[in-house]
Amino acid sequence: MDRTKRGFVEPGPGIGAGFRDLPANVNPKTMSAGLVAAIFGCSGPALIVIGAADTGNLSNGQTVAWLLAIYGLGGLISFIMALNYKMPITGAYSIPGAALVAGSLATFSFDQAVGAFIMAGVLVLILGVTGLIGKVMRWLPMPIVMAMIAGALIRFGIGAVDAVGKLPIVVGAATIAFFLSMRFVKVIPPVLSALVVGLVAVALTGSFGTGEAGISFVMPEFTAPTFTIDAFLAIAVPLAILVVGAENAQATGVLLAEGYRAPVNAMTIISGIGGILAGFLGGHNANIAGPMTAICSSDQAGEDRQGRYGATVVNGILFAAFGVFAGAVVPLILMLPGPLIGAVAGLAMINVLVMAFQSAFSKSAGYQIGAFVALIVAMSNISILGISAPFWALLAGAAISALVEWPTAGARKEATSTGGAH
Image 1 (cartoon, helix red, strand yellow):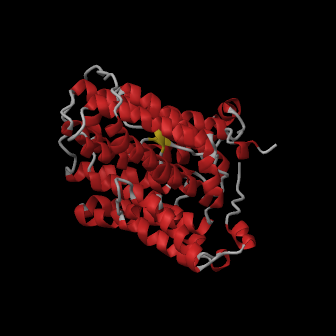
Image 2 (cartoon, rainbow, N blue to C red; image 1 turned 30 degrees about the vertical axis):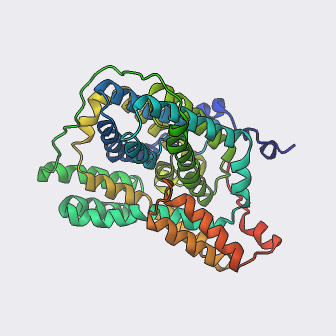
Image 3 (cartoon, rainbow, N blue to C red; image 1 turned 90 degrees about the horizontal axis):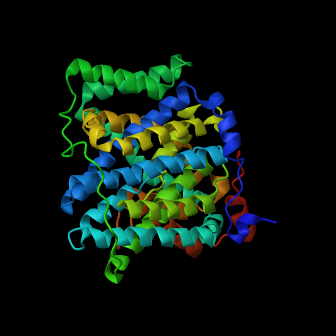
């Protein structure tokens, strides 16, 4: 019996198997990819959350509780999914969701927002348990999904170029180190070379930041939820769509591009559970993360695809530790210059982007018009009804493809065939 078609959780090798094989898959490449993903997720995105907390006039304790919820549970999701499926399925939280919440806190009290966080998690959980998201992802033509991934992640590549202009010596040195390492040094991951050389350049040029985050080491303060219809419509529904239509969709596409059979239902279910638990702790959602899954699943995490889950485990440990010690760690993270973090993250995604473009615009795959529409919509960063571009890219790409390309059943089956490693 095909359990996935009944909406159940897809089976995996199991956490025991993941633990057993983990020592063999924790190496310099997986560790460096996991570290880069963690630094990326614990720097700029943390500032978005802190800014949202400031908008809502939250206490330091409530802010620390928010960070504990999304980072602690995000790390736990990475740990569970990576070990159970032996895939680099990486947990974190919705960065656009944090921006959505920041705007909403000008209208809603934080206890109402917390109630909406929990309701958003329930919505995501229902979508996963019913298997609806898995069915939609199996129906969507793969070139359109890959084009969405390319459009959504291209900003990281462009960001790496922009970073050179902002901090030329530091970022330039890191970039040169990356490509020289890729060409001449096989034992050291290029992304690790870039990070180390970048940090040395930061030290030599005195480019460290001030390390002022606006919060200190305090105990978390939890907020009792209040459930209202207004907050459900304004926060919960858009947040649930962001989690499923942006973060999970990106992560699924990245995994498919790297040759994995993504457990879509399980990814949605654990994102729903993460949203509910994070809400009770005072955080907006803990779920599968698109950009960090891209970093941990790329070839920068090692040539052996079956071993790249070690990068996600490393990332999960660092994420959880960041959540626990958020009040003390945030000022240290803020000392790293943003352009260096953005550049290293962009360099780590080069091959992911190359594969996404190849899969999206291969003549044999078809759906070229729909894929192009998905690409440009995802690149636009448009937001409608509080829902970010990746969701609209999939919707627009599929709609235009159905209108002008009218694929046959056989072509659709071929284009949506994923194959891949377990």
